[in-house]
Length: 366
Image 1 (cartoon, helix red, strand yellow):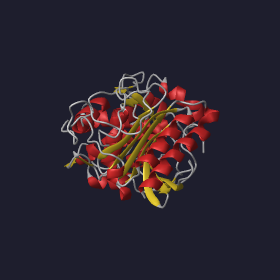
Image 2 (spheres, rainbow, N blue to C red; image 1 turned 90 degrees about the horizontal axis):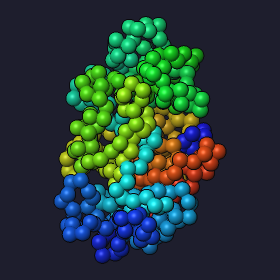
Image 3 (cartoon, rainbow, N blue to C red; image 1 turned 60 degrees about the horizontal axis):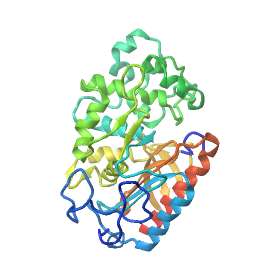
Image 4 (cartoon, rainbow, N blue to C red; image 1 turned 45 degrees about the vertical axis):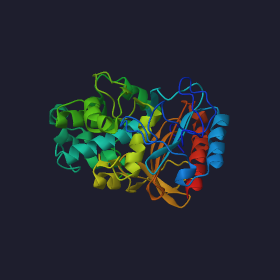
């Protein structure tokens, strides 16, 4: 794996939301909440056992997360209910935690919504068509001929090395011009490659198509509909929020996004995302060279990784340091993790350790 992202019943237990230091296993409702919370901004709660997963077995996995020393949160959702929630290392339920490149998968969702709203006509549209003013300034740029499909599938063919160029991109006076300055690789068709610069174009593309910045689109079309009330988002030098990294969410809110994807785009019986877009995003389209054990057959959809884990088709958003939003539709299951940002040399081990916990949960649910 490349080094950057080797990448409830309320009566069962009580979780100490105030300081996040409880060693208890399962989520509980806030005081005076209904067992099936009517508050759209939070979760209905159930015991693991009520959803077909043994309480003690799941509690053991959550306890083992403590021993890794890098975890910040681990949440499990089954059948639309939150069945486990643990915070580590001083993190707590209200905290906005960085999701790193999981931001890319959220940006993909916003592209799907723009297509549904007919603000973008087709994924076949090129950067030159979607950003014509910028393209006119650099008419010979290879980036101008890249399609939205190629951006979403990691096959832009633009030469970019995240190990040496991520910081240059993040601090560029104009990230669009930075992407336009990238040469084209010789491969035809282009193989999958991780390319923050190509994905950075989604933010200005959506802004031009929708007439609003990406954070307002996220708030209006996604977050508000899921009851996500707070978030933070890093901006580039132009003042735009970055479509490739920088989003911070509560872990409970990341779990809402994951469950909505696992549930065919529905949240509490309401179709939030187009079902076709969910299916298209999580369908393997091109082999991906990044790996994390024990997942096999790793591929890429539309800014979502796909693979096979314990015999089940899975898809996941993947952020640096094992920020995972894993969906297993066949099991009605979603799992999210957050962890510290490790040194590059520690990244493969951290990714494998955290994904090992996720795999054990999927095995329990199988």
